[in-house]
View: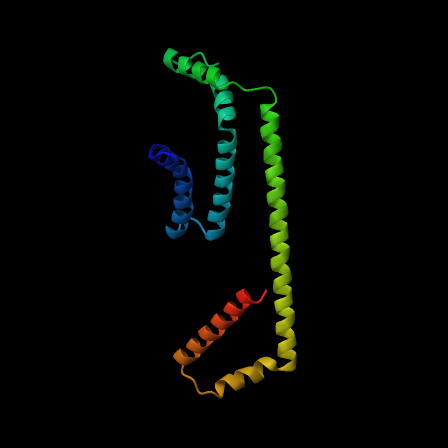
Length: 175
């Protein structure tokens, strides 16, 4: 790849970058809550995907629609006719794009449902384990055992960091 193509490729990231700054900016400026900004972000991502996957089709259909207005200047009408001629809508293209979009949405909904179900099962198992520990008083016994070490707050945090570091390392090593 040449540097020219790489630099031109960076311009395709501009809409995405602007959308990220819009979503985060609305949160940091207090215009929207994180939930509202997330909904706006998802909607904007959907619109960007729609335009990105159907850009030629949308441009051609828009040119066909707008070129019918008689009040447009001749230069604009000529440019729209050029767009329509260079980007014709092929037979079946609308249906093909729609089918692809429905397929992608279906796959994303199924993936979202699977991830949400997995997280819900993890939370239910953690709640059950916590309830069992509380019923048998394991949590109280462990808290008393750790308190018997007479550690300062900093020492306790360092011990916990080392403990979780060792657990995380063993988790990656043992399959």
